[in-house]
Length: 285
Image (cartoon, rainbow, N blue to C red; front, side, top):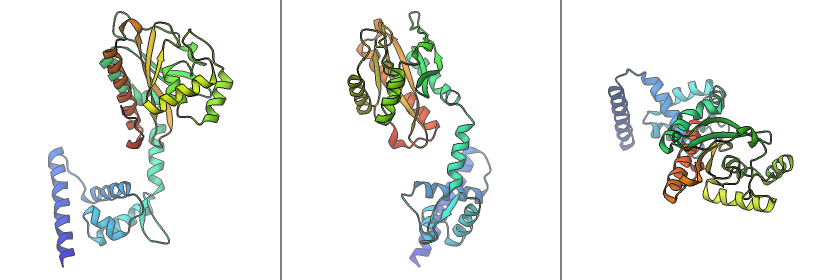
């Protein structure tokens, strides 16, 4: 009897929450759709498969209603059910939709709102980059809003992954064998006196990037320019690009550097969020 009362209380709370959301948004909702989406949320938040009663309990539904909703979702591929335990889990269609959504937009399209925000916040030059093959390619650039600004030839960065903040932010998270292939293909061109020119130095630098969660280029690609970079990840946690902010060395005091560093990391995390990256993959600032 206590279980029945508890379930009725849960249902009333769930219904009240739904009505509250509806009133707040000013929009009518379809209860069955709302409940089906609640079930997907429950399965997404679970650490493993869940039995019917547990799904129903967490969603605040009676077992019969929950079963019918799960069966409908399962027929469409949004929910899976183990043939052995008969427990439920998220279906393949959820992953397919996520991948299809990503394909609808380029990295630059998705990143642009956050790049503009970073540009407005720091007022410094902002770059978005990715590795295409073994070449570092600039996908988007926003110029500084200040009179004294960083200017560079982005076409010259193709072989500069080891010497730029964007390149280091990506290289740091690649398997060592892949890093070696990038270096073997691109070499280690020396752009300034500060450019890292040995594999040992580059690997040590990338170790620091992984530990700190961000990269720095202190006049290694262009004299008089300091850059901070951070990696961008997709829904699987894989690095798909990076963002950086460039500062003329005459403006790079400790306070401004710290502001830019934090802003770059926040920007990279926000872009990663747009790709559905797991929160545990965000670097700590």
